[in-house]
Image 1: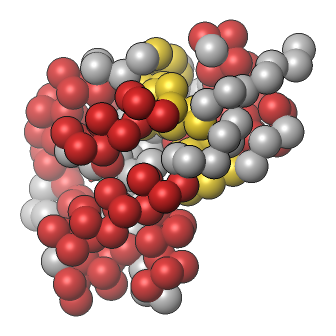
Image 2 (image 1 turned 90 degrees about the horizontal axis):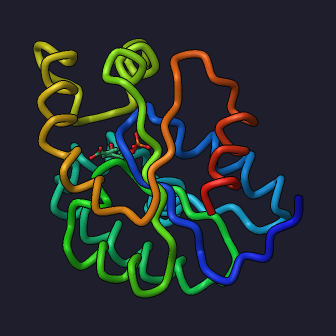
Image 3 (image 1 turned 180 degrees about the vertical axis):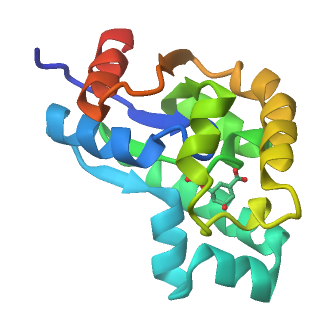
Length: 171
Ligand code: S3P
């Protein structure tokens, strides 16, 4: 199936939801550019996200995130994967609603945990009890993610291309 994208498709959702992997597969499938706000922030700062959080703090990161999203979303017909906190800021939601189509990639908490538990790349999970932190973040964010235009859910072992298919079907 070919699909002509007139807007940037913005993938939102929790850490471990598969935004980057699904975004890449989707962009390949639809023959449109793939953009990733976290990667862009890291590239511009020449630092990793944990380094940015440690050196400049979360507020600094959030400001860069907003700038990058506003800049990248002007690309028509692209896929933009965002960091898990991006959709929480009202100004980001406004930009995304005006210029893009937001797709919430949702997955069960246990699935998210299984995907992030062995990685040390998420500064927000560097706590004494990262599973409890993930759970708390998830429950706080769900009502905000639910404001997305579309929601696509993933089962525990759903392959990435199948998840990308689900997004195409939802669009
Ligand atoms: C964050 C998620 C991360 C990254 C940063 C903050 C969050 O991106 O932007 O560590 O607030 O949920 P992923 O969702 O790609 O892990």
